[in-house]
Length: 233
Image (cartoon, rainbow, N blue to C red; front, side, top):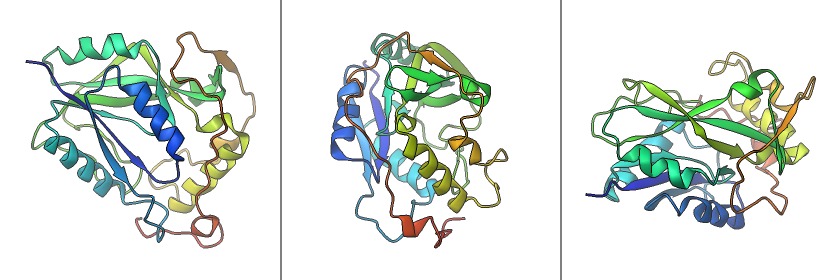
């Protein structure tokens, strides 16, 4: 019997074209989508991430998911994923598959200096009842805590947000507003906009659809600049 893969993600500040392109990107290796549309929630910067993960897991269960794949509208999975992911889900191990996250700095290049070249994201696992999940309101783990992680090097996740320079600054400001004491990430968030000693590397595996129009990350400034919303902390 075929294993059903459901991709889970939320929409908040992303334009619809970016979401549509993600659906196109994932369709070759994903069977269905669990989507949490928060575009109508304007009273807070972000939903509590514990609730976010729980609600999407519930949606995936209702869709009959055997495997869950976490992603975001501003990510693209490399074209090789359509060959690798079907192979992984035919294995019976209770593991979490992790993939390298590449922070794009133009449509063809990603950053590799320092922490940038080390980013890995656990994103694919078999969905079961009773799995122990993370409990942080932000920066919470998306995968079962009891499962070992297995890094898959054949697949890259390309993160598009940093292609536009203004997004790097906004992202840093937003995270500092939600976690001003670096409680949930000790390194802090200034590094997101710091280009000191930046080194870039060209992609070796393309992603489809390719980045062709600007995506600007633009949450309401009053929610993170001068009126910091810390409702979920």
